Length: 378
Ligand code: GLA
View 1: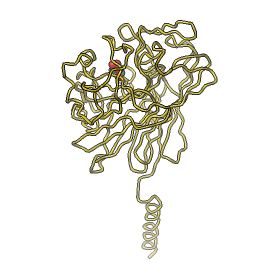
View 2: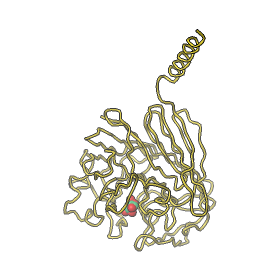
View 3: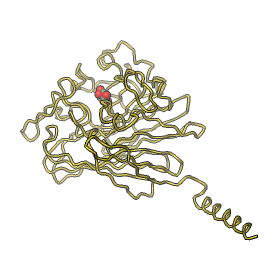
């Protein structure tokens, strides 16, 4: 008899816990050791889960998203970002998989710029130019990390203090990035920065998406739309020439949803120079407010991603440097164009283009920026 009463009580308590949680997954966050650097520094992985069952894993090395799940049209969640198998991959790799890139994301011509009459020389790491912050960018740094309380989902904040003179950049820059995995399947990134001397700043996020969840398959069938009437054409070193060019009548026109692969091999000089898409688009309605700027749809799974940002530009990179030699998660050799990036940012080489929106940050100012990747299915 006692046993029966016990079983009834047990069943009731289990049911009430289930009912209280609405029968759904609960947003939560977990912290575990991800690996160790050669000097013994422990790197942590934060697992963020939302009420729907989506999951993001983010490490405090490079504030890097190492995996992110999104639902297909049958409600099946799969990982949709490329990544390395372990910490060693992120330490050795040069693809910027999932990382926060800085201090200046994208390229600066000859690594040189002038600020308040003084010329600065940055470290050169891409031909004659500086790319993604120089030889050791923010993607290769250990960030401080803390869990953040948020009603919107589970959140983690990463902070990196970049010393004055690091990679040639002036001023001690403190940058924090808060990732929130929202209960409506948005991954929200909030950037905040201050400096003790005038400096330049252009942080971005470098996930390679493949919404099919099958990383053996190139992303050429993904249907992309970008809210841009113009792009910044580049020279052979992928430095903008300084003019905006109309996308109309060119393979750069993504104003209407178009497969990434539809025109990628066209005989169009800009595509030849970059070996595919690796260009910055001049986003419509730049006024400091967050607005929708791009949209991607994967027809076989129905996965759908929308990108929102307050930034003026977006670098659309079609994974042209992936070539089968990058062995990623599950030992998969990532083929050419196995992932694409949509990096929200200021236009490349802005420090040398005085007419373009400024990337200067001064003491006393606080840099704020928000980017959202929103996932759904149709
Ligand atoms: C950016 C650049 C590309 C390439 C990748 C990283 O998107 O624009 O040219 O360097 O990063 O491989």
